[in-house]
Length: 468
Image 1 (tube, rainbow, N blue to C red):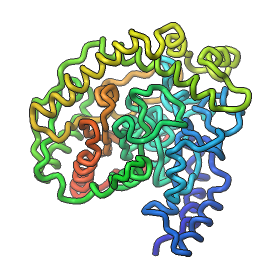
Image 2: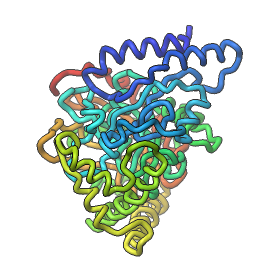
Image 3: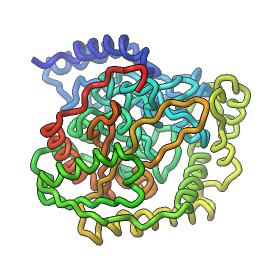
């Protein structure tokens, strides 16, 4: 018998009380979560089920506006402001679908655009989120709380946001599914911005089908993404393997991805090797950073204009606030990226527009689309990230490699699916595609997930060991 929404939320809150003190993934619990569930149960009893996710609980990243909960982006500068006057459109869609807003998740402060030497998963408002597979290990960023909470069973669904890796990384590190949709698929109004060119909210869940179901709610385009999460869709798919750059940086991640290729091929997919993207020089990353900083400066000021109360109004105000509260805000790292944004070109300037154009040319027609077309591919597959690194609040983080930047700059979708545990920590594979190819990527990802479960089973649940 299916549990009522009230029963399900009650169980989740009980688990939160036990597990959350260890991982610190939720910065604000909704005080009326049980009342929301009761109301939705009454609607269901009266025949008013709103959809497939009616009564299901969801956590929302704390850079997404909610009219009844604080939205801080992890910063003390917004911690005491009144809640936003209205929900972000994506939150309205969650409520309209009958979901219970369980609370807000911690994030890397300002979605990790503050400093070049930041610690992922830390914010002055929410503190440090830890990985439930090893409390000394990073939960990734910037959607750290969303990934850790889903993996720890604190909610079946969460919403993250990605600019470059902020869904894929915590999904990979915490062993859950993350879908970063094509930019524009999910509305970003009411989301504290980094980049109009690259920001993309998306779902996180424990299965591809659940993540696809949440994407259906978030997207507002009348597309049933969950309808693609069915068996038998792998046969005939052509999947490319871009080994140069995106493989080879982590033996653990590579080994898991090689086993994934074997499973995909056994299900009828054609694996096409030697499908490398053209090499991107440092200038592509430099251009990306210029674009992000230029768009952040204007975008965050437009966002702050929507907030009431005694809050910063400009990026310079935020910088000044952090300096005035250095003992808390700057306790572990600085704000070098904010300072670069203030000194750099503005959005709409020739420098910004030229950098954006070069990035698009390199990653779309000269990158992902070129390789897909040249080899007749449906998707690319790579290891997602290495296993989660140890948390270090003193030294700068280092990542041996990652999968996200080409899709991020192009604005293209990325679906990340856990593969297995390596030395006790999750590793994952990510499926890349062209614009609006989420349906095909979900078919591939779901097919892989089914084959993985048949071969080795889902990942073992985390037990929050203190050290891995």
